[in-house]
Length: 337
Image (tube, rainbow, N blue to C red):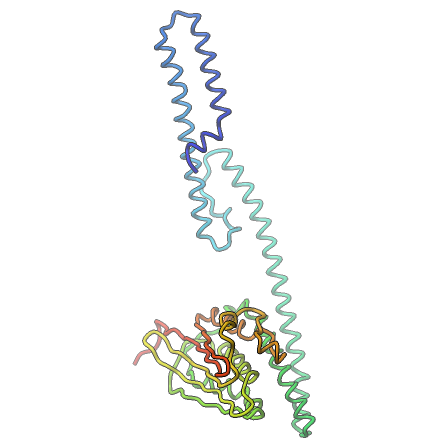
């Protein structure tokens, strides 16, 4: 916003002023007034106009610059009307009133949207809990009637249960900050619990588990972290080799972080697809060929890691498995001996 541009926008006022000064000069010709005085009066009027316009420009420029600066700092832009600086003219006051009305309407719409989202999340959670009951009942019936058929049914039920659990965490992921509790946790205990939750599938698919973790502790939410590990283990099982499948967990202690590595010797991922594995809905060529992927698992892992303040990376070579790393920053309030 420059003074030249501001003055250009007021060219009509300037033309009228010049016309008025010229008219005044013509009338002064009737009287014996020296031409120097007439010139002085004309120039003085023009300079006073320019000075007044410049002062008005400075005032408005400060107002808009302060408004833009506050707007830049605001996360919820629709709240700008609450942060507007004090106004000193009718034009700015009218702008303030317009923005307040617009902001009020926007805030009401946002609240309605939040309410709809909350009701949808509650419905999904209720539906999922209702679904879990018949799944659990079916598994109990299968436990008491073991056969090849019931084993096949159990496999399908386990897969359904995993998708249901995924849907539950997906619904909660947008509000994860209200549902997690960060505390100091033993990393090996979190890994053991995740492996335990998948033990039946791991045994059935003859996948060997190797855990090389000592007594490392990390600051995280154990429940959400176990869910992330479940998604990674599930992927390793989906894309395993038919013979000699292995999933290895290892921990590496560094100065500023603890790194949990999850490696498998599965079929791997093509190099050109690695950069997209955390995209929502991306299944890759392996997922499409095996028709087992939803493209949500790793996307959800990345989303939850961001919520928890964790890092996540994936490296792979086609035919030589995958390595996923979860990076836990060391908390500034970690306990010291």
